[in-house]
Length: 226
Length: 88
Image (cartoon, rainbow over all chains, first blue to last red; front, side, top):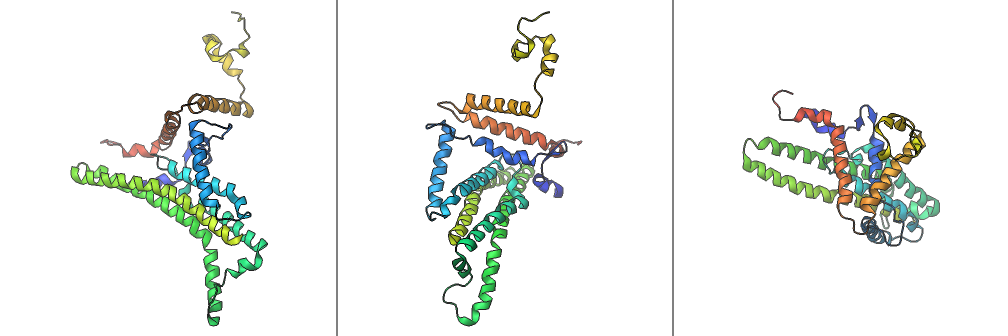
């Protein structure tokens, strides 16, 4: 049981060759590029969803912040599609790997901070001290604010990893419990199966919500810095 | 037996069984050729099932089913031990 639970999170190899790159590249096949004015149904649905999301997410930014639209839209599409594909049986979800989430979070966060420091140096440094703090508290508060700034990329990455990994583990465990309970007591197995169904519905929601939260936070950091 | 059309230009369905090994050997196996083969296969599937006026759920669900099957084959080695058998 011990080794079985975590083997689905190891880097996928097939006959000794690592195919993790192929699996990361797979969702791009499901998003065909629109070539015409009126496209096929799949492309039209995706276009409509992306327009809805981009309007909702990029309205709060000024002109400089809206140059990040492409980056944020591709981010939410990638994380959403990767999380949803991870709910298929036996599949490997790249966003369960902390390495990949750190690779997404740190450059994006550092980009927003660097942009703020370059273009609006005084205003971005002023974020370290909230308005109206009593004079003796200032040194401690600067330290606290800088710690909370430096922890932002870690929190982004760990939040995504932990949520998706925990969901997958729960599904594995409760599914195993349902199978084991069938021979012992059918009614308990039925209850466990209902719990499993509800959990799967939750996981669908979590997959989309995590993508949204990640992108929203990056856009928030951007808003602070433009 | 002399073919009227040279072997190089025949499609697979027109190739006679005896000519099959030489037909396979004369295909383009350079990286560019393999990439071209993947591209042709992708567009063949895409234009038949997705890029149509009234496409349905079949187009994308066949792709997802193939993905599930691929992943099952990938982890078969670990799944072998979880079957309901008396002797593993």
